[in-house]
Length: 553
Image 1 (cartoon, rainbow, N blue to C red):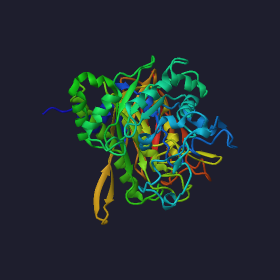
Image 2: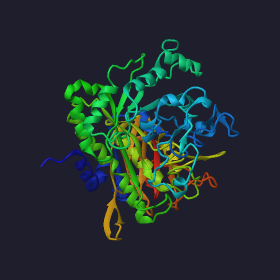
Image 3: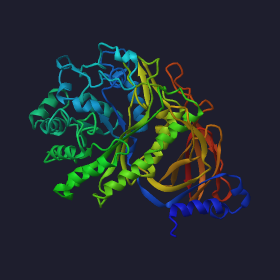
Image 4: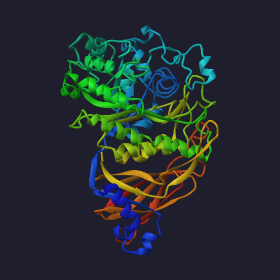
């Protein structure tokens, strides 16, 4: 029987770690877990857009989150919250997606340009939502959460992206607007100054130079809120929207509205219909959008969980790995040359709203340490699949699901999710390396609605590694809430000269940053001793996300 390389490595590491990693038996016996970084087995370049973000006109994301207005007493850059801008640009964000989300497929971009006092007010897509919406939100009678003022639109968003140094990603309306409206938006954003009517309109609005938008989503969740299409119907719309668009010298990158979680049927049927006119149609697709949220069971808020809930949600989030692999396999049935990658432009842990958040902040909560581990495991997953994933955008940037910030009035707080993004920054643009993690599993109990118990388990240590010059970055998540993981780390093909660590962890599993305690959970730096001959044993703290920076000879 043929033994696959991954299984061979696991078997050899467990049975003969001393021979593979350490010349001294005492060294190998000291550690229960092992990591082998295969430095001569690159996976691919980690696209910086894996560190992308998402902004939608939902709850408190735009108004009070991103946008405070030019006349606000809150420090701002042309109306955009300055503290958020200053913080975000430090972590060099990838592409940022706008204006949705479900909001995108009711949005007319023309409502959001020109003099603000003349911009129309429209009902917001999320006005009547009942899904996980708190009672106070349902009772709101006014405000931008219910009636969109359009004070923040295309130009304001483009300015925000320029301030933080991020590419712009715009999602077109396929459900309620046609291809002509989309082409006019493209014209407004990208036509050179003085050339077209829409370019002159942009200049009149204070933006002479084009925004040069490369990334365009053709609809959003077209299987649901984006039109309730069949995949074949959506494929026809996709062909229509992507046919014969003027480029204005910009390489356009179209992203298709991909599946809801594990719906491989949507992926297969879309690709079948798209390629009815020939495989050349695949050249129109830059990315295939995958959406997946992991949610708490029942009506749980972010810091309402026990130890079993801790593991259960982490394991639910870990499903991302199989989703990527499953859809990638189906895409390969049609895209033999593997030109098209997955763009995971919505992901994260979706909890119920914290009761102390403002009424209009739909789905807003202060993320905990558990959410930080979910951030780490997802980023590691994308990096392990750097050959398959070209973009990822947690939902969303501020004041809602899996946010990097909570902001209200004059206060801006970085959540634990932000700190994980900061820790993982060195991976961006580096080369992902094949890495094997061997560690005892962690057992827990899962309970259904009738309180029936099922035994389950999750891996005890997992992560990813990359190389940039002589620096290897290793990131890892230890989900064990109580036990550290003493681990042998070996660079197969290189010698470690020095090492350092940055760790996000706490003995309080519900630790989080709030307006009252904005720095309750922040990373700490640790010194690391490298043994004789470049050997390294490191103890990963319980309930932690860790970055090890390894300098090699």
